[in-house]
Length: 528
Image (tube, rainbow, N blue to C red; front, side, top):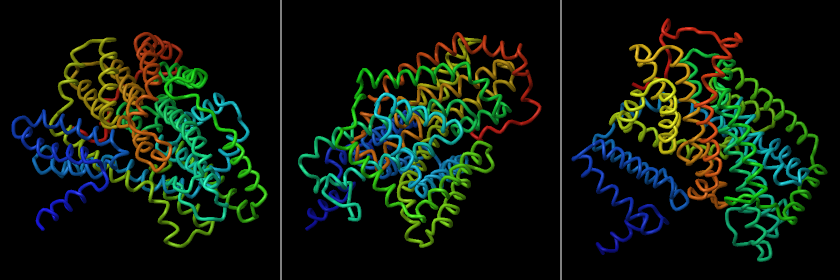
C-alpha cells in the first residue's frame, strides 16, 4: 500500500512530464541546498542555469511549476529574501499590469486584427515580401507600443489563422465547435499540409519577434528598460531617439535585409511557403466573412479601429502606464461591442495570467542575482576600461548577461552603476551618455539570441501558439541565430566606429546639447 502511494505521489509530481525531467528537477532540489551551504555565489549561478533549463524544456513542462519550486527553495535556503522579491515585483509592476491588462485588451480587438492580417496574407503572395511586412510592422509598432503588446497582437493573429485552417482540415463547418489543439480529427491528406503551414507560421512569428527587438531599441517607450535608462539620463522622446540612432538605424536596416535574405536563401528553417490549399481556405474564409458580416459586426470593427487609434496615441504620448491603457482598452472594447457577461471576460485573461505568474517567479531569480551580487565581478571588470574600450566592454557584457538573464534587469543594474560612477567622478558626463547608449543597445539587440533574454520572446515561447506550430526553445535559438550574428556584428561595429563621431556631429549641428544630470536625483528603478 505504502509503495503504491509513493508511486502515485511521483506520478502526480509534474504530471505528464517525462521521467528524466522529473528526476532532473528533484536532483536540482537536492543539490542546491548542499551547494548553498558551501558557496551561495556558486549556488546563485547554478539556480540561473537550472531556471534556463526549465525554460528550454517549456514544451515538456510549463516552466512555472519547476521554476517556482526552485525559487521557493532558493528563498528558504537564504539565497534571496521575500522582501527583495517583493521589491523586484514592485519595481516591475508596470510590466505585470501590462501583461494582465494589455494582452487581455488585445483579445477584444481580435476581430479587427484578424481582418487586417487576413487581407495582408491573402493579397501578398510573395513570402519574402510578406515576411518583410511582418518584420517591419512589428518594428514600427514596437517603437511606439511595448514589444509585449505587439507580440500579443501577432500571437492572436497567428492563432486565428491556425484555428481557421485546422477546423476546415478536420472536416468541420464554421458554425461547429472545434478544438484546434489536437490533431485527432485531422484528415490524413491534410497532415503534410499542416506541417508546411506550421513552418510558414513559425517563420512569420520569428520575423515578427525579431522585429519587436529592432523597433523596441529605437525609442524611449519601446522596452521597459528604455524608460528606466531615459529617466536616469534625463532624455525626452526625441533626444533618446537621436542618441540611439547611430546604432539603431544601421541595425534596423541590416535586420530587415537579413529577414529578406533568409526567406530567399531558405536557411535556418526559413523559406517555408504557404501551401496553396491553405491559402485557398483562408481566401474563402475572408470572402465568406466579408459576405456574412452584419451591420453589428461592422460597427464592432469601427469601434475596434477607433480603440486602436486611441491605443497608439496613448502609448506614444505615454498618457498613463501601459497596463492602465490596456485596462481602458478592455473597458472600451467590451462596453461598445456588447460583451458584458463575466464569463465572456474570463477567456481574455487565460493567455496572459500563466505567463504573469512565470514572470513573477523570474523576478525571484532576479532577486537572487541582486542579493548574491552575481553580476558584480563583470561590472567591476568593465569599469576598469577607459573611453571607447569601456563602451565596447559595456555593450558586450550587457549583451552576454541579457542572453542568460532578463534584459530589463541587466539594463537597470548597469545604468544604476553608471550613475554611481558619474557621481563618484570615475566617468564624465559625456562618457555617461555614451555608456547609456551602449547599455540600451547592448541589452536590447543581443538578447534576441535566447527566449529568456526578451520578455516578448519568452511570452511567445510559453504562449498557446508555440506548441501548435512546434516552436520549441531550441528551435527559437536556432532560428534567431542568423539575426543574433548580424545584429551583434552591426551594432558592435556601430558602437566602435559610428557612436562617438555621430554624437559629436549632432552636438555640432545643435541637435543635442551638453547638460548635466547631477542637478537632480535620477530615477533608475530602485536597484541598489
